[in-house]
Image 1 (spheres, rainbow, N blue to C red):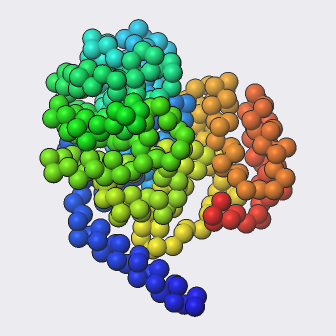
Image 2 (tube, one colour; image 1 turned 45 degrees about the vertical axis):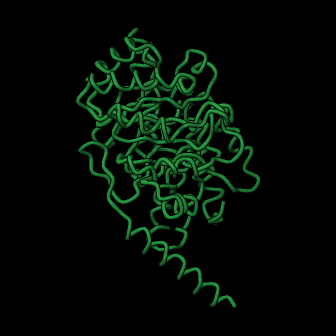
Length: 358
């Protein structure tokens, strides 16, 4: 029975690869050639900073995006916004994402962003948080599609760099017009679109619906890459997005927080149909140490220590009786204490075998 199940699963895997190969055309963002079904690191506030982007790039992310940056903050030279413009050669291709709803501010921010020499400029039309939406920015602009299109059109005219958009299905379930919206944004000149499979009202609740994203891709007038986002938390989910929904690539968000290996695991599964061995404890500790040190080098001791805390739960997920060590990592304000905790964990749990499904 086991041999029959294995043979059948291998047949299904081979057939899905065959179907994908038959339809495959390598995607491009402007003149940027991408590999077959690229994996993109999503722009995430206080997550997608240079240290984390470096780790994800090393583990197979094909395109990385910065944290989203306020256009108002940029034109006012706000330190936090300006710092987010830092990008490095080893990250390329890299996109800088900006958000806002005021045309003049968005156009001025384009001029500022260009000086950092990104490969792509991305417009955030999808952030659902209240402080952004209340200003009609992020997903708030989904209530005003004409403004959304106008902003995009003028921004495309302002720069020689390819403009891409990240958005959601709509404001709520009664206003989902993503097929029409995506086509209008394409006509305005964008070079790719990433769509999160939820509405703004949903926030991050419920399941992401990829069917409307597939409808965008299947629109015969669409010729730019259509990337899916939302609930891509296993290699199998990424394969379904590729083979069942026919999308051009996957934008990975929460699944890679504290788990930069996710990109490598997905690619391994695509190639072999099998799960890669999980990273060892030594690999996890090494990554956590590098992450913290790079964060300190970039933002200084205080912010470096603080902003890496959110990653430790996933770096060391699945270890029994780990709470005291995790608490040490996420409560200490002194990097020496955190580095010492890493050493202790490696010494105490160095032989721990991680569950591939965890």
